[in-house]
Each structure stands twice: as structure tokens, then as C-alpha cells.
Amino acid sequence: MVMKKPPQPAYFNFEESLLSQLANEYALADTEMRFCPILLDGDNCTLIDVRSATSKKMVLESSGEWLFLKQIPWYCDDTTMDFALEWQALLADAGFVVPVVRARRSGERVLRTAGCRIVLFDYVWGTRYQDREDQRAAAAAALGRLHSLEGPAQGPRGDAFEAALDHIQLAREVAGHAPSVAIALDQMQDLVNGWHDSAVHHGWHHLPQRAVHGDYSPWNLVYHDDGQVAAVLDFDNAHRGPVVRDLVEALLTFCCVRYAHDSTSFAATPPTSLPQDQARVMLRAYERERTLTSEERNCAADAAGAVAVELVCLGLIRGDYPAALVDQLVSWAADVRQDAANLFCDGRLSATAPTDGAAR
Image (tube, rainbow, N blue to C red; front, side):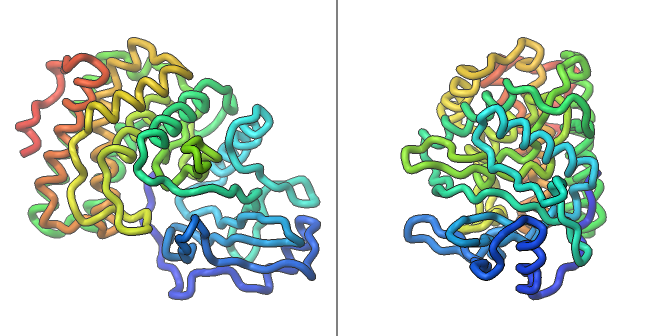
């Protein structure tokens, strides 16, 4: 379920009194502990609160050991949180590139204190995404490996089309007061419903249910200097469902979406059309690790359209995209489906889905 962001205090950080509690809960040396509210990446220095405002985060040093402290965000319920942490533990045991979750003295992975759910990870050193082809290929290859490993057998279910419709509904409540936005949201709802029908026709509900990351974007990976992935982060949207959803989101967020400077917020400009050359490089890298089934390929274009709508609505909800761009954003989401069809299915589109003209 998509939920409205609750109000947060102007000072969005941890109290230093938490240090002694962490020392006790995680058997750390409290005399040598300190909070480090910045991220270092070469010559770049960023306040963590500026980079991300979804939940409290902090780098922690303890006797020369570096850790990452994170509050579980409001939209990640306990069922999803337990699933995400179990999956990350399984991935770490399998040698996958994911931060190790620290356990408390009690053996539990989550600390509940002062109304927060807090998790402590090993800190992963690396660099951020720099819009390099080798990084995009490495991200896709890591995703293919991720999808090749077994995740938890049980967990919350997710669906790309339901998620898109939920985002449309929340956008109506938060950002849909302008007539142009309300009309655009109606258009996107019609598109998503049509794409869902097309995907069902191509076997969407028969695709294997596997562990899905749910937020596979440039900001949730850390890289080595050579462009290889040092770690995949942020499993707060993890669920079980068709994994093609992760792949199309990766293509859109790495190749199309533009971000504000040094921020996870979208830039106030429309995303670009899906560049076929970049997308093919990522798709080939993914399939070197895990080959898509014909059913997944047939459903990929419809799923890409749904994820594009979700991203547009997210930008409207957060205020990243101004209402003046809404027609261009709807056109982009509609065109993404054809771009993805060209990539996955040689341009074939189902007759059950609306044409691009329905979005304009």
C-alpha cells in the first residue's frame, strides 16, 4: 500500500543519547563512538539529510569500525521489514554484494526506540553512480544475479499495475487539485488499466513469484572505482512478485530519469525517452546472469509503462515535477511502453492496450 508521508521535524536526525543505547544493544565500545552525518565520495561531501529525507540515517564510527544506522521508513510495515531483512541475510550468506545486517545482543535485527525502528548495517565504502556505461552494465548484471538467488519463500506480494494505480490515487489526494493534473491522472489510470489487461493476456499472473527489490535505482547502489557494484542497498520496498518489474525500473531510472543535483529527488524536467543503445547494454548484462523467459519479455513493455506512471506520480506527490509539465510526463509514460516493446519484443504491442493517443 502507498501511504502519504507523515510530517517530520525540521531537525531530522538522531539524538546523541542514542549512542549509549546502541553500545549496549550491539556490544559496541561506547567510549569510542561518534556520529558522522556526512557521506564522502572522493572530493564530494554530502550531508545525509540532504541526500535523502525518507527516514533518519547516520554513519557511525566505533573504535575504527564503520557502521550505517538507518530508521525504517514509515511506508515499510513490519511484514515488509522482516521480509527485507531476512532476504538481505540470505543474500549476504550467499556472498551477494549487500551490506551485512548487525544483530543485537538478543539476536534480533531491529531496535525499537523512541517510536523508531532502527537497523544497523556494516558500512560499505564506495562511490556513487556517475552516469557511466560500465556502472549501468554492472548494475544490470548485479540485478540478474540478485534475481538468480533464492529469496524467502514467503513474504508480502506486490504488483506493478496495482502499485501504479495506488500512486495515482495518492497523487489525486496530494497533488491533483489543478484541473490539468486531475485530467492527466485520469489519462494515466486508463493507460495502466489497458496495460494491465495486455499483460494479463500475455501471462502476467502466471509469471513466477520471486523476491523483488522494488526500488532498483542509481541511488541504491554503491560502486568500486572500477565500476563494479560494491553493494546493493535499501530493500525497504522488497516484496514477492514478477522480477521483470525490477528490470524495467532499472532501465528507466538509470537511462531516462534525471535527478536534482546530489539528491534522490527528480529534476524539474521531463525524463528522456528510453535510449535503445544504453538499454540494450543493460539488458545484455542482465541476461548474462539470468535469461528472461518469453513470457517475461512479452510482459515487460506493459510493466515498463506501469512503472513509468509510478515514477511520474511519485514526482508529483513529492513536488519534484511542477504541474506545468504534466502533459509531457504523461506522454513520456505512454511512449515508454513503445520504447520497451522495441527493446524486448521487436516493437510488437498488444491490441488490447490503448494507443499512445489515448494519453494525450
